[in-house]
Image (tube, rainbow, N blue to C red; front, top):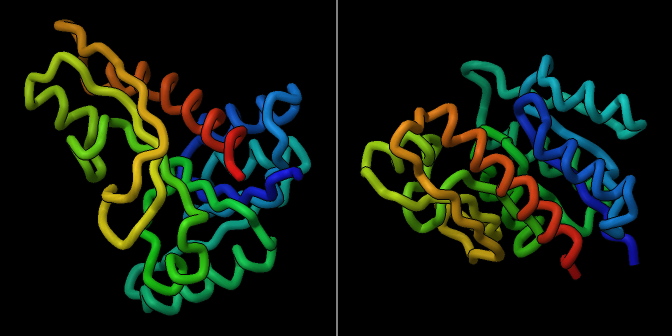
Length: 187
């Protein structure tokens, strides 16, 4: 059975592109039914449209009611009837309404080996801590911040000459592979 996926993303869409490419190559039996971004100008929306995938912006405007935004996001995503929701570089926390509706069916990628270095700055925090190994994680989203059940991890060596940017770029390579693997194996 082909897995129906809604991708949530905020940035340029390299994670989304990895999944699109794997699906197009026949490596993953899935269909991305929509890409939803919290940013109207996110590059991921253009990537999606270039592949014939519906792309929708759902921004959270400053001062807006966060709970209402989450409820609206929930209904928007539910309209696509996904089997799986993949947060792939989505820079907003999902609220209680969303998590209740898609409990156990929402995954996220993170640029660190959780439970180490949760939050928005995994590569920076890994460098600051002086670790020699960090990596990427795909996990099931729960109500905590990067605390859900770990589904897959991949290690990345921290090099002496690494900057936050160089380390993050190498982590993204692993993150993309893990996302593809988890979606391929989803059932």
